[in-house]
Image 1 (tube, rainbow, N blue to C red):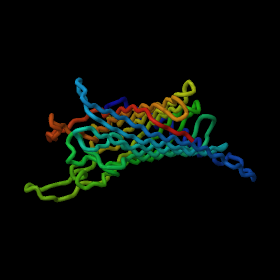
Image 2: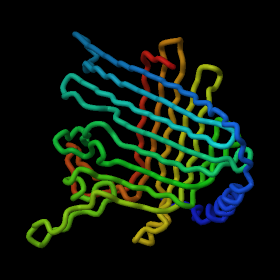
Image 3: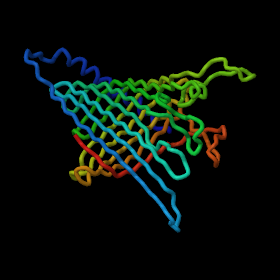
Image 4: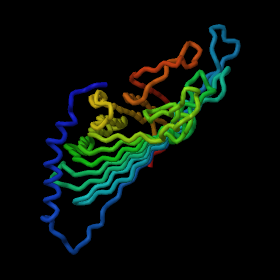
Length: 322
């Protein structure tokens, strides 16, 4: 997904701010009194269950049962100068229909940590770390015989240094001219296939393995991360995060104009104290992650394409907030 060369604009604006921040270090007045930094914590737990059953139903239907567990936790530190935000988002879901075995329909681990030091009101120098993976192996259903993912295959780790602008408490714009994105594929079979952008294995003319595929794909470039978190109308909580990354040092120069897009939005609607409706939409585009083309029976054709990946979920279930 090619966008304008915004990463180069980032350098023009963030480097002066970083230099200004480093110059202010000597001007800070040290005090003998130590201010006890306040911590704030929150947690959201939800168990969603969907079920359908049919007996002698002339209109037809298929028995189905689905269960999804969601855990969202935050731990934030704030004093006059320093801030440290931590978010952990985990979910796992299973679905069982009448004629198919138990399958997962949701699986995610997302940890985000951002530490910052104030330059001026609403502006911090910050370090952002982000980790993503999944708990269990996944298949490209309806084909459930070939594993296409598992824990740390892939695993994504991003480390970025930049400027964090927060005009309001609920909105953050993080701009980094120095960002590293590391994709791990700890499944050698998947790595040999070059899954998720790692270097594939090399074979001779007889099909004998010469060199195994790489388990790591490291990219370096510029990052924009926008986060929005706000409670609307008292009972509607909206969390949205948009991440744009450009690999400025890609060996394939034509790929340097492509932007990785990661946009995730969740909405939790409080119906009463213990019941919540949840909606999630997650969109991904990564030029380095080719998507296999499947035939009508779910078997790979050997061809690959690059498309926008979309995941959408809606659920109603029991919840508890700390």
